[in-house]
Amino acid sequence: KDPDNTSWWRRAPVRLESQAVRDSILSLAGTLDLTQGGPPVKPAEQAGSRRRSLYLYHSNNDRELFLTTFDEATVKECYRREESIVPQQALALTNSQLVLDSSQQIAERLATPPTADAPAIDDAEFVRRAFRALLGIAASEAEVTMSVQALEEWRRLPEPSDRSPRANFVWVLLNHNDFVTLR
Image (cartoon, rainbow, N blue to C red; front, top):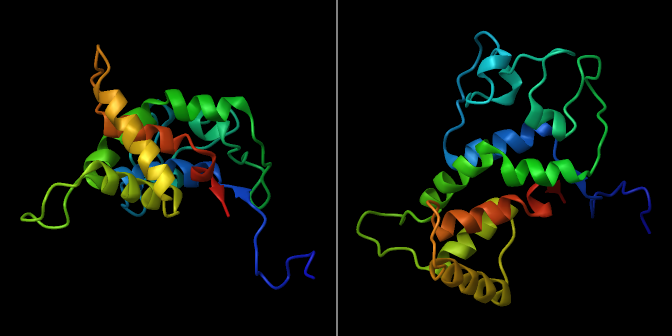
């Protein structure tokens, strides 16, 4: 009835722009620097910067690798960007130090009770909060059950990592296609 989508009753899924992906990760972690104005962040300082992606120095020769992987616009492109889905994007979300560091911070924020005297957040509630915050959806009971089982299995690993099971779960959701897709 509406093949051109003029009534906006549905939306064709689109990938988030590179800056939105990076800024979303930092925002969820609570580390995004919202300071307005000022000089651009130099290429040598970009990997550790928490400034909004808008303020990263941008040229044809010096581009931030994480943003380039997610189809960052070139200097000549302002309004239309290429949209691609390539394996390097999944690898960037899996191996990026930004994502690894942020997943621990996001997990800590999601596990924080609403008030100081509130009980600790159990795994099921943590999973529901993570799905809502990172993917923008309500987790089904089957998803909650399987996710809680995954958290329990991470805790039983013989050689635990320095990352918490909850940070690992957040890391998995950051790698989910729905995190980088606008529906």
